[in-house]
Amino acid sequence: MTEKKQILKSASIISLVTIFSRILGYVRDQRYTYLLGTSLAANSFVLAYRIPNLFRRLVAEGSMTASFIPVFTQYMREKPREDVWKFANQLFWTLALLVALITVLGMVFSPAVIHAFTASSGGKNVSWDQAIALNRIIFPYLYFVALAALAAGILNCFHVFGLPAATSVFLNLSVILFSTALVWRYFKDPAVSLAVGVLVGGALQFLVQVPTLVRKGMTFDFGISFSHPGIRDVAQLMLPRFFGIGVGQINLFVDTYFSTASKMPEGSLAALYVADRVMELVLGGYAIAVATAILPMMSHQAAAKDFEALKKTLTFSVRIVAFITVPAALGLIILREPIIRVLFQHGLFNVASTRLTARALLYYAMGLPALASVKLIVPAFYSARDTRTPVIVASMSLILNIVLNIVFLQFFFRRVQNGGPALATAIACFFDFFALFIIFRLRYGQLGTMEILRSFSKIFLCSGIMSAACWLGNHYTQFTMHSRFLVQLSVFTGLLVGATALYLALAWIFRCPEMEEVYGIATRRGRGGAAYVEA
Image 1 (cartoon, helix red, strand yellow):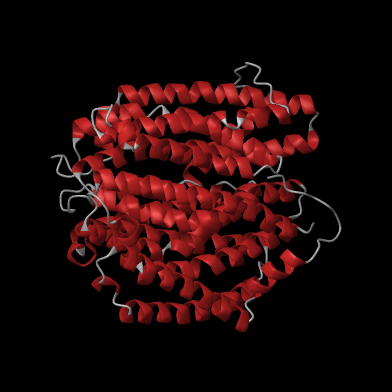
Image 2 (tube, one colour; image 1 turned 90 degrees about the vertical axis):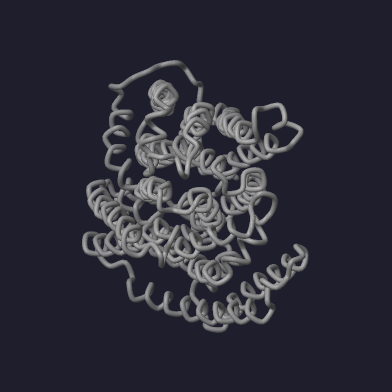
């Protein structure tokens, strides 16, 4: 099987599972917005959930996983089986100890943590006591998902992608169950029930992977070590990667902080969360799937010193992700209000909530292609053991994001309003991607830039025509004039299906290479080997 086919097959497996998970994630978020809307309780729940979730993405799924996979793949290539699993077992228990300490500290000092994440001191946008109580319930979630992320990293190195990608399904099912009246009526209020659902879902994310880990050879023999060479290698890589690969998550913290400013309208944090969830639906559909599939492959290529193959893998992945995210971004921008209205305008999530969220989605969508591409190019640096460059660029990007947030809040608030944090993040992501791409090109040689530009020109042409058709369709169907949900859903579905069909038809007519590559690889048998990807 060719490397391109392996990427696409792995990405397809992850994508199918992730799309199913995102659908359940939508149901979960719809239940949350139905029960809480964009009220103070909604802001408090989002803040309480976002803090441990931020640590999870930075420490577990961000820096730790990205640092672990290259080291573990090298052990798989060079070390006996016994040494490989000794390393995995000791890292597991060492990580369990460290994350347990972080979890306890987060619960004990929850008031200080909550205040550190908010910009307003008067409590205008957050109910302090409720946020602190919810944060203490949810914080142990970090412990379980950190272990789940390590388990997923191990399984990914064995080309097992389906199960790790499916773990979020159990989180979503848990929160959905706890959001039903059958369950939440036994708690103080719906927000507390949702928080307990998050905690139970986090535990399930780890536990469902244990049987497959055991079948692969994991014994869970107890042993804590800070001196094991493999663990020290992971630790040395983690600190710079903590900042470099987590810049998007650090920017999310900045967004959270500024969205709670006293000048912001009530419900801004909840609206930002819902807009971010819509973005995650698009990213999770294929962009993150490709990034997850190529990281182990690039790590193997870097370990074999095959940098030409690594560059081809990166270039191919950037083109494929752009083929998906550019039209998606334009579609989100044009159809932002119909999307939010159809998906979330129910229960306590009213017309004002829709307008707040649609404004945030407008600016988030502008940065979608850059945000997705950063997830590809940062692991390329790390696979090549280059940790310094992403850190420097991430530092500059973070500073830019903070400065832009201040500028939008102080000088352009009437123009951007609650969308300021989203716009600042979008601009920072574009800076991050272009800086990293140029540096990688200068340092490691040609990346087929002209080929990428030719592909991008066709993608933008097809996307532009599609977006014009979307605008006309939205205008002449008079979506906002319909009040019945079934009519809204029918119109929205027609617009979405029509736009997708038009884009794919245009891509075929203009012979976009991505369309031909995906179709050709899917229908042609691979040559020179029978590498397989386990689901």
